[in-house]
Image (cartoon, one colour):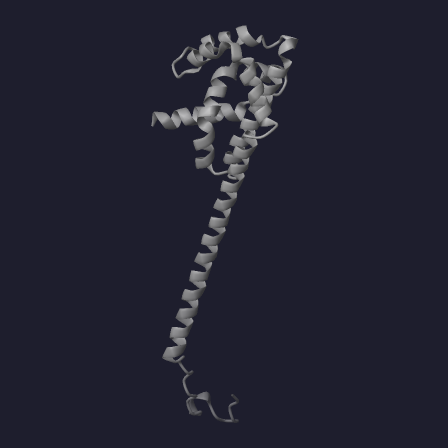
Length: 196
C-alpha cells in the first residue's frame, strides 16, 4: 500500500483484518493431522509385523537346517559314535550327572580327541558347534526370533556343550579362536537368567 504525499500512515483508512479460517477449515486440518498420525502408526505396526515375520521365518530356517543335511549327518555321526556307550552317556549327560571334569574325562576316554581315527567325530563336533554359533548369533543380531530359537535349541545346545565343551575349548586353543564362543556366552546368559 502506498501513502499519498503529505499523508501519514495514520490518516489512511484501516485495512480490514486478515480473515480467520472458518471453523470447518480448522476441523479439516485437525482431521488431516489425525489421519496422518494414524497412517504413520499403521505403517510402523506393519513394518514391525513384517520384521517379526522375517525373524520367525529365519528361525524356522535354522530349525529346518538342523533337521536336514549336512547338520543332520553330523548329528547322526555323533549318535553312531556313542552307540556302544548309550547308557553311560545318558547317565553322565543328565543334569547333575557328573562334574564338568567327569564329563570331560568320559568323552576323552571314548573319543580320544587327537586320535586320527576319530577325525570324522571331531569334524562333526566342530561343524555342529559352528552351526549352533551361527544360530545363536542370528538371535544376537536380531535376525532370528529369540523365543523360537530358545524353545527349540536351548536343551539341545546345553547337552551338546555339556559333552563337548572341553574338546571345543581345546580346539579353540589350536585352531579356531572363536569356535563355541557364542554358545559359551549364551549358556552363561541363560544361567544368569535362571538365577533371577
